[in-house]
Length: 193
Image (cartoon, rainbow, N blue to C red; front, side, top):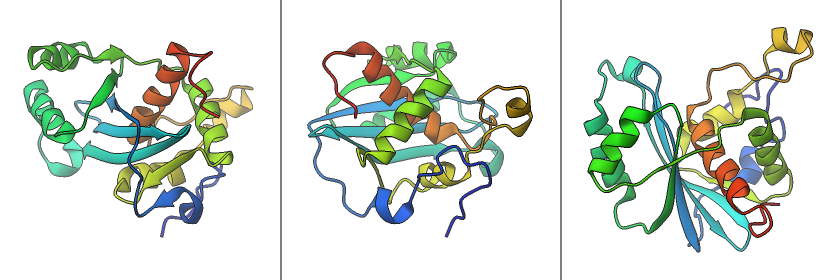
């Protein structure tokens, strides 16, 4: 069992409430990608049904932990396998991942730059969790761990800044890219909360 970290960003996160053994079939699916070379790469498959968001599945490759890096080509092949037969509406990717974006395009995987604004994304995700409009599949082990261990930067808070520590955030960033980007694309139509 993970213990909620001191100064947790998502202090409302509750494994008993927010984690599902079985995620329902969704009306639409999206993928968020947080790309890293030395840092982990994470893909999150997020679905939406009846105004509720679900983190359905995850891909997570930590080259430091695994002892080998992957190329953009490797990640593109992994993304194709990850998508499988799922009908994905859009793939949102970290805007700084230009080389991976280009490799995806070579394989017919068209991506969009994600809205990666951090604090507004945290607020949206917090509101969704509080309103029981965001749930996570038990399969998403890394995302679940990150929800419990993502913390505010105490030094930044002393300076009056709301800023999380840049650690334990790769799967969270991938999910945030989807939530943020969908809100930004259709603010009057897509109801997230």
